[in-house]
Image 1 (spheres, rainbow, N blue to C red):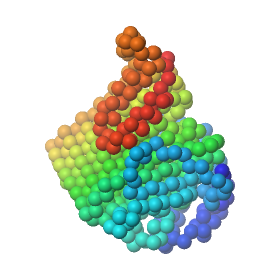
Image 2 (tube, rainbow, N blue to C red; image 1 turned 180 degrees about the horizontal axis):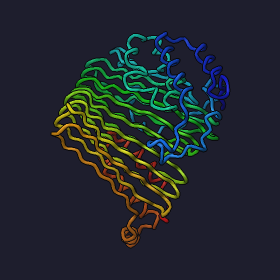
Image 3 (cartoon, rainbow, N blue to C red; image 1 turned 180 degrees about the vertical axis):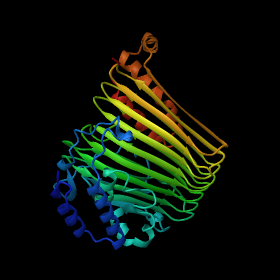
Length: 437
């Protein structure tokens, strides 16, 4: 189970060979070249940068990886966690940065829904995607990782739902890594006016990972009066370096429910940005993080209110074992025109070890004068009295801790409207809980 890279390292020679092997429209090639120029001009982020001062990547060696090439050998795809008992409207799989297969229900294809390999569909539907891909909700200039992704993304998923189409079956994608693989996957979701869809995405590993690398991006556009339920589960191996920029633009009277699970990776640095661009937009984001060993997960969230009469609600909860660490930095940004804004953000942390650490930095940046914006954060250890009480009722110590941790996340679970996701996420966290130190 192996994969070949065109040329070791992200070099000019490797990039030129990568471009020459692709049959893409000129506008997309131009965007790739512009991103490559930015990549060459920038240094890797350092701890002198405010956004990175709590995240140390000095052990990360970019030259150890390269642009994914053609797959070689047998492919063993892990079993998905999120789809048990679910009838899907479409399903896609990628392995070590390359597409394996996609399928979409005929009844949805007949209504104009597009779901499949982004690279292929960008060629087949060039003019449809040109206003969106790598433009509407992605900035290659954000940092060196963003520029690298903008230049070299090789696989990805497109979900496009035409105006007025309501899809009542979820779409699902699984991205897998093995044997030191590289994944530069890009997700583009476009919901036109009045449409509805549900998308489940997850990552996993199979076999030996040996220090994999993921540098991804998500672009989501939710059109006027459209509704999207989106679930993203990051479950990489604990030797994978995970970097991602994720942005959603939500238009007038549209809604988004985004459930995020972060369980894996050695180190994760994720920027999660939601922009409410039309009056009456509503967003709910539910984040769950569980860390162990020496994992380091850093999530920066941004709720940007551009239009008036919008509501955003971010709730993040993290439980930490061993010597792991989380960093959550949240910002509610309200523009001058965004009157009648209702913004909320909260981060709660449960320490399961005396050596775990959780940093929480909520923030507000408000220019309007008729708003309601609140934020808060809590960090605490498991109450020994709660453990004792549960043990006095016949639970073992480990069972008691597992029950307490599950209860800690219950507020998040109650918000999840998809039963398979609610149960799978709860079981995945419960399996990781060990005896409290």
